[in-house]
Image 1: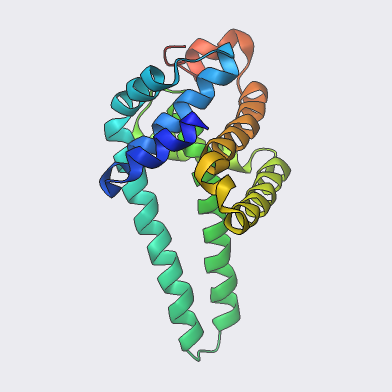
Image 2 (image 1 turned 90 degrees about the horizontal axis):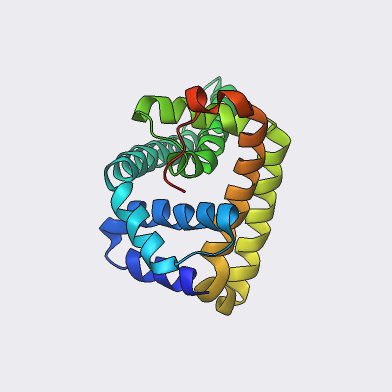
Length: 192
């Protein structure tokens, strides 16, 4: 509950939403590792640590998302011969972007890497064991509907529970993707 309220408060100045998402996932990661977390200090540390990369990720994914939505809306207005094929292609690209977005923030708080590698790895993690990614999308959709219906959940639990679910599924994939003895080469864990 405290994490959810902290996240909402740090998103009030809208320009801080992307580092706030990274900080949210950083605290969730710490919960998964140690079970005990000083929420405020960990949140502040992750907020500052991921400031630049989270902005870059957030802006790029926002632009891509807006472009894909505009493409879909624009296609609905057009009457062209291959409209269905183009629609399917745009929906497929949107699905891949969604898979990548579900994995990028959990990866960001786990890895020290370049932006390009982060994007490539997030797509790979999103596609790996795709049934888990689809399960995550379905559960998140149901949780969103429930939280919008009962606003108490939205203000006190929605973001922290959503982040925990996303990170939990990403962590399941990380454990299979990264061999235990090769973790130094594959994944540079951020400070635990």
